[in-house]
Length: 432
Image (cartoon, rainbow, N blue to C red; front, side, top):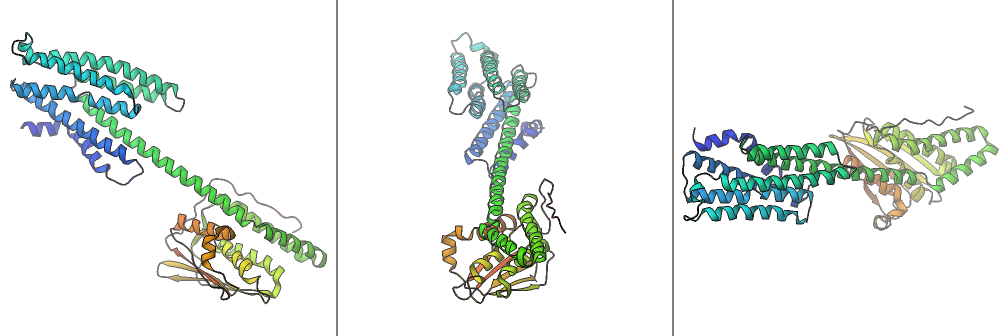
């Protein structure tokens, strides 16, 4: 087995870590590009040190003590403290602690400069580089004892850190350093560095991914709250309560039925959004029918509804379609003296479900809606939920005096209800 094969065999896992980093770093992720660059640089540095150390072992084994050997020793001991700099930079960014490895370099290189002179009494000791290595070991151990102690104390004082984990991390680094410098397990420190760097990268990746997901969750909760508030429109509450008050005098039975429907409508608005991201179209349609039944009591024959439902075995985001229907009643039908018709259509085309909600009301300018989303906050929230959950958008077609048509395409694959933690609280009506 030649030296290259021996090196590849002895350092197989180490090389796998190095080249895995080269493969992972260019991949798209939430990790900052500067962290990825530092990872590649650090791993490349470790690879150079490892190859140089293997070359030194080869020269020493074959008793080749020439200028090549001395230069390789200087290169090795000059590069050896640099992973310390990288480790310091991970913990103390923009810190002056990295001057310590620089001092270490100066001590080791000075020792070699003394050996290079043939007249030096140390020249004969050049056959083995134990003298400068001893200087390196003493300095390195002193540094690690101080630095890792400070590191341990620093993280121990921070309540959000795991003291046991930090202690184990420090212990592993210190043990690897001792095993390496005492020749018990040569090269183990470089491999430990490599493992530490890749572990750091993975921890950063998981941490940033958690932050991104938490940000998405916060945004989704804000959307839920905004959607819930937008669903309970004051004008609809006032009008419905006034209608119920009037019915109590002229038709108590209808007033009771309307009150029950109104309580179901409010319950669905307030609690469904806390339990689900999506629910069945059939459930959404039932919610729409309750809303339209209440509005028909107010508008009578002025409000006509046509249901053309050919498919309903699919999911929709919670409380997404009802705001569209309410928008059609509020901004389309009720502003016409003679009233109008709202048509709800579903079709299945290829692998998609198409929902069409249209009215023959007064219509509006879609550019004005884009400029003033507050006037149509229910529509805006519904569209945001469609984009975030199903990666689709509603298409709105409207012209003043010609009515409005809203088209939504739901992919067939989205059939699973995403349930949220929590129990549904029921509102029971009495007298039924």
